Length: 299
Image (cartoon, rainbow, N blue to C red; front, side, top):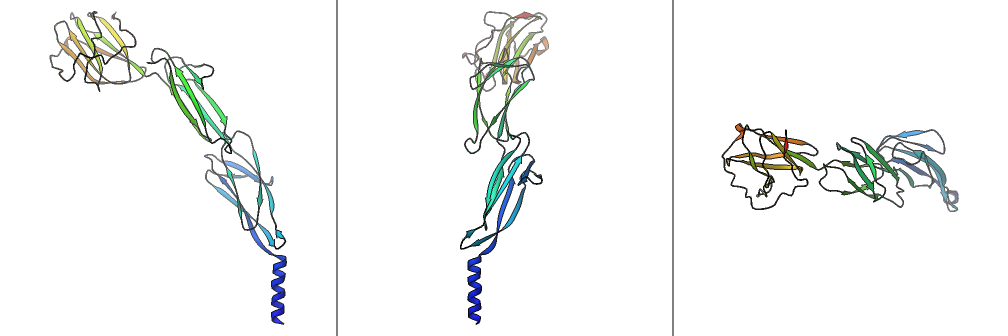
């Protein structure tokens, strides 16, 4: 009798099946707060990296397993292209279905940090202009099922503070983030002022501090008279300056930091005169190529 009852119990279990948990996990994989609803119910919020879990009792038997259709609606802030999104998940006994909330919007911001108007192009398209301090922003929808990121080519240029006519940078646009292009000139100006009372400046050399050579005499056949000045544009970085007057006295500035779009004035006075040797640099090469020819001008 006991054996018979046991067999009946086992057979009943076999036919009717058992109950198991089916799970749903919703995960916020963005950098901002997101909201969601399960089956159009109460709106819940998740902080970045936070998750919520739900469970349902679902039966399993020889005739099959029970499942449950769940609709998850969600949305976020600036990194979401649409106001809301909807996914349908099938919850099965003994298993967990996941909803990964991921941003699908990537942005590019182009900013002019220059003191003059600059231009730019996206992917060799239409030329756009930016005033000093102005910026433009662009956004793209990145469908993560097909597009993980977007490559953008930005060409730009400006006026006198830009050593080359055009520049080109490549930016990768990822969902949930902004790529930045900051436009600023890559040249500074070195101005040499003759503040001596009556001494003519006969030679000027400007050379990168990393170079062992002084290069050519930038004055050439010109003379920098008292109360006159002359200037050149140079690329940013460390520069050495050497001046020789009509009496073969020498004047120096060493490792001068030249920053973008900045004028640096170097005044040479009677008190600056020096007869120190500068044997570590030679003058027979052409390391310096001036972008704009210097002109002697009266102060």
